[in-house]
Length: 317
Image 1 (tube, rainbow, N blue to C red):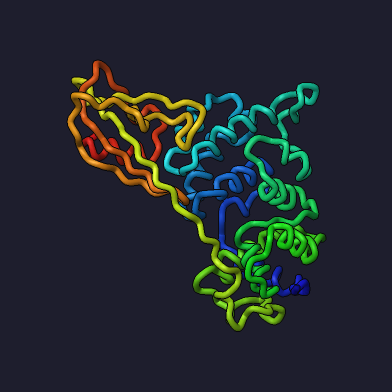
Image 2: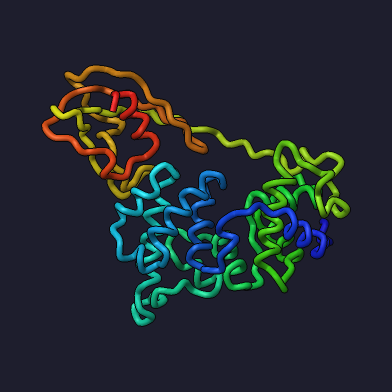
């Protein structure tokens, strides 16, 4: 297993070639945390926009803790996977508790193990924030780093434990933050899944799989799930749709939208069409049925998911 990455070569490449991303211009742990949570399941190009909105409105954990969760969801709408926004709000509240209450007096904790105790923070996010914001010598593991490891070591299907062991062995402890970011940047921009740029790789000399990089790692086969739902799209006399806030469970928890489910009564309503929506491992098909209601809600005043916006667009809203 290759454990001989050149620290100097990779860090020099990163200093010269890294993308100019706004969260790389701050050492504020809160703002770094916001970027990491956003980038869990949102592309970088879209994440920039949402990060800037969140930082402007919630520059500190206290500012978010003082807000209602609906406001956080409203700013998050369109970023997807809305449970992240709910957990982020819960995180801000926990952080802002006093030490005696089990919180951190409004400051993010300083170590990866402490960060792991916060809502919505997993091993990767804890290691990323701890190393980037505080310089803690802890290794990150994400999909990009797994791919770099697999090619460097010529491994077809490395386990999480194997990737973690490799990441810890190659970690540059004197600058863990930049090192982790450099490895992730390498995987995101050079050692890519389908078109790796091996000729531009700063650590190609140690790569055991560079002659056939597309073999490593083997792609994981994920079975997509289909979800069939029905939705009632009712409008009042002013053309405003009936919108309800969803409960605490499910993929759209806490978001607003037309009544929707797998057992919705559509008796007496007019069929409009089907809205298709794709998530990472799930395809959603929603039958939309039109009707009237006594009083609707102005959509711009509530947090709507991308799926709900598609449904409203089908109904002419």
